Structures are given as C-alpha cells and as structure tokens.
Length: 465
Image 1: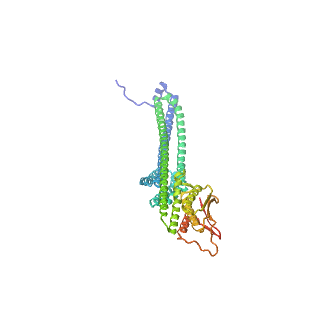
Image 2: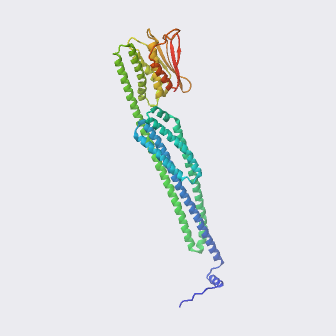
C-alpha cells in the first residue's frame, strides 16, 4: 500500500535531518563545499580562459612570424633573382624576381591583416613599408638597367651599400616585431602558469571539503582538473609544433644558403670563362692588326694601326688578368701596368725604333672599370710620347703610379723629349687620341694635367681607387 504524499513543515524536516545525523556542522560543511565548488568552478573557468587565450596568442604569434618569415624570404629571393639576372641575364631569373616581388606584397598584406587589432605592432610594420619599397626599387632599377643594356650602371647600383643597408634594417625591424611578440608570449605563459597554480591550490583545498560532503563535488573537481590538464597539454603541443616549424625553417635557410653559395661559385666560374674568352678574342684581334700592319707602307696608317693595337691591348690585359685573379671585382694596378707597358714596348717600338719604357708602380688595386680607363689612358699617353717626344731617335718614357692620400692614386707619364718651347709647333695628329684621353678622364672623374717645357712633357692625373 503506497504512502500518500504530504508537505512537511520546516520544523519536522529539521527534526528528521537531525535524527539522521545531519546538523549545523553538516550544513556548514555543505555550504563550505558548495562555496568551494563554486570557487573551484570559477577558478577553473578563469584558468581555462587564460590558457585558451594563451593558446590563441601562440597561434596568432605563429601566424604573424610565419608571414614575416615569408615576407623576408621573398625579399631575399627577389634580391637573389636580381643578382642572378645581372650575372646570367636569364629570363628565368627575371620571372623569379617578378614573382618574388608579388609574393612580398601578398605576405606583407597577411601580416598587416593579422596586426589590425594591434596598433603598436601595426605602426612598426607600416614603418617597414618604405624600406620594402626602396629595396624593390633598387632591384627593379638593376633589372631595368640590365634590360636596357646598361650593365655598368646596374653593376654600380648593385655594388652600392644602400641595398645591403636596407636589407639589414628590414631584418632588424622584423626581428624587433618578433621580439615584441615573443615577449608577449612569455608574459602570457607566466600569467597562464600563475592561473594554473592558483587554481591548483584552491582545487586542492576544495577537494578536502568536497570529499567530506559529496562525491559529486569530487567528480566536478576532477572534470575541472582534467580540463586544465587538457588545455595545458594542448599548449605544450602547440609549443612543440612551433619548435618543429622553427627547426624546419632553420634547415630550409641552411639549404638555401648552400644553394646561394653554389650559384655564386657557378656565376664566378662563368664570369672567369667569359673574361678568358674575351681576352683571347681581343688578343686575336691584336694579332690580326699586327699581321695587317706588316703589309702597310704608309707611315700615318701604320701609326694609326699601332695606336689601335695599343688600345686593344689595354682592354685585353684587363680580361686576361681577371681570368687568373681570385678577386673578380678588383685588379692589381701595378702588375697590370707592368704587363701593359711590356706589350706596348713590343708593338710601338719594333725593329730599329728602340725605346726605353719603364714602370714604377706601388701595389694598388681598383675596380675593373677604372682599370680599363687607366689602361687606355696609359696606352694613349705612351703612344703620343713614342710618336712625338723623340723625332730624331729614341729616349726614355716613364710611367709612375703612386698613392695620393686615402683611397686615391696619382698616375704620371713623362718623357725627356723635345718638349714644347717658345715658338715650337704643337705635334700634328687626328685629335682622336685627345678625345679618347678626355673620355677616359671623365670616366675616372678627373682631368689630365699637362706640364710642357723646353725639355720633356709630363701628363698626370689623380683618381679615386
């Protein structure tokens, strides 16, 4: 027979509870356990939110750093393609440079989109945009000069230190953004760890009370603790994944560096072979001129042939010396001038027309372009001295090269010939030699100073090494 349901009064309910050992102490324990449960749940939610925010911050930081790395790698790829196009002239490098510039803007846009809610880092990122534009402007200028056939101008732009300075400053600014992100991540990790420690302490305290009042509180605490451990495990997994990505990126950079070095070695070998072939070709042309000159009986025509041969020898010797040099961008002027004068002696002073050509040169180096200009100048000045200084015989012609201050040199070609005294007529000629001398002096950004006298003539110029 079922017992009918009826509502009991408060006093009756309290009496029944007391009879079962449920008193004020139990109420206090229940309330304490309930409060502990509420506190534990609150702290668990707080810690879980902190860990979730930290996880999201890690994800965001990883995305920003990945986009920054891709932007920086694209800039390096554009510069490498530009230099490859300059050295090889292949359309593949031109296409690679255009693709790299496009990728720079894509990845830069990704970084900017990720930092829209971060005014400080967005401002720092926007400050790098002028440097990126300047770097790409330098790259495009080199490519345009190469496409227009202005190799020397392209090479001059490439040799300027501004491109390297821009890349270094870009790397420094990207590193600064990365440093700020890592600092924030470290601060977030510390905050998450503090939250975890506080939650663990309160959970332990609450577990003692919850064990005394109800298994449900223990179960709830266990679930909260498992959630915290799961969030912490996910954070650890994210950190390990980030470390793996960093290691993989480092390996990629090592491989890329090795490939750049191999490409550089191949380019140097090709350039060395080109110099060898150009030097041989010019030497062959010089030999043809020598053979042709043997059939010429006209004195003026023969002198013109010898002057042309001297100019070709000046350029040919630069390429032959570059072929045997370890430094493809610099030429040793002392050895170059010594060999050039020896060749001029053989071509300008054959047979009975013996002349004394001497060289006094300090060990100085300069670029290939300046070497060509110096060599052509010496060839012209020595040719003029051979033709006009000693009309009745032969004499000494001296070539001197000395240092003249920091990174400057003085070149002098002098003789002890007839000179130009009062009433003496100037030597006659076509004027081509003077035009060539003036053009070479302009290339060296200097002028040739002539000192005339009753005995001897001295021509000198000061130029930057």
